Length: 192
View 1 (cartoon, helix red, strand yellow):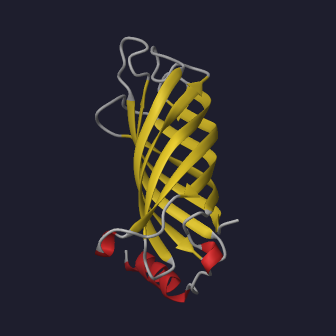
View 2 (cartoon, one colour; view 1 turned 135 degrees about the vertical axis):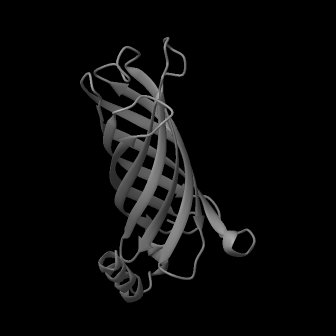
């Protein structure tokens, strides 16, 4: 465990300060490519894994506000998800989706490391029923905790809980709950 911690601590210490245009700022934008995956957890269909990849475009809507360590910026974003694979016991479903609703609170820090919380929702279309025996059209909702590592570009690491369900379009509707790790690479752009 210590062998893993020290390289991360070294990385935190040696990252130089980000310049203003590489930070989230009111009126600015975020552009990111990302990929993530994970396994199903209790509360839905078992023995299922997912992998997805997409691109995000976001709008930073506010300057930092709020009390003390809760101070942060509010971002609204949209994700296009051209690759969404669901590995289930019956088959592998290939899909694509769009998440038109991503609300993110980026905590304002004085360092190059900015954590965030996010709520996200969208639609998923697949080649096979997900879960098997239900529907090829599903809805996704998720919550995430992540960290932006700001430098010339923004590297992102997050843990995401995602629920996939057809919202009652068919019966039964067991849904899939997953915990995913997502990695991203992007840039924050200042006001234009």
